[in-house]
Length: 249
Image (cartoon, rainbow, N blue to C red):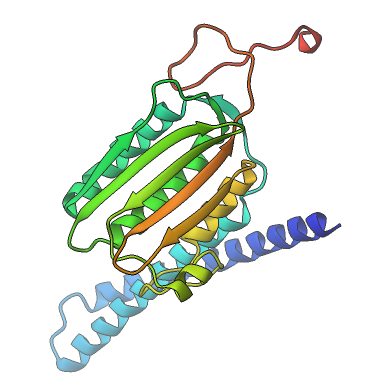
């Protein structure tokens, strides 16, 4: 009953946010047209008007970003799980993230055993959750530093850790950081980490954090290992399951 109530509430919230985004699109378009009228301000009054228009445009953009974050948070429920090679999934994500990290003087180290078992993932959602953790780690190191990704098998779990050399997290922040809309960052929606934990829990796993001021932060992710029936060949990034005889037409 509680699950049905939550699903109904999430669906209603999603429709509501979509409606807000439609109005924001109209508002943003009119702001753009208004800005064009003041493209070359000639008086102090016109310059003030253009500055206010630009600020309103920024606020509209920010509201759209928060709306998108909220939609991602509410929609983490029905995952498309298939067995994947975690190393291939991480390779794609790190390749995407590294240019941003390098621009902030952050080095990414990846240490994975060669014999990690496949894990059942919704790869797009899992990458988004992990990207949230990587961005969080990067933002904790404004002067640069290192992010280390580790993984190991601890049956029945595959355990992965994201470790940074950042400034660490105060105990009161650590206690609340997975609560929706809780944020200590200017402009933060407070939904990145709650969404990441929700994604891991939807996979049947968990996400925890350990930190202390001045000692960096370590996120620990756990994914259940569910042994699939494997074929010897198939795409490198996807471990293909062979249907059982009973399931064949």
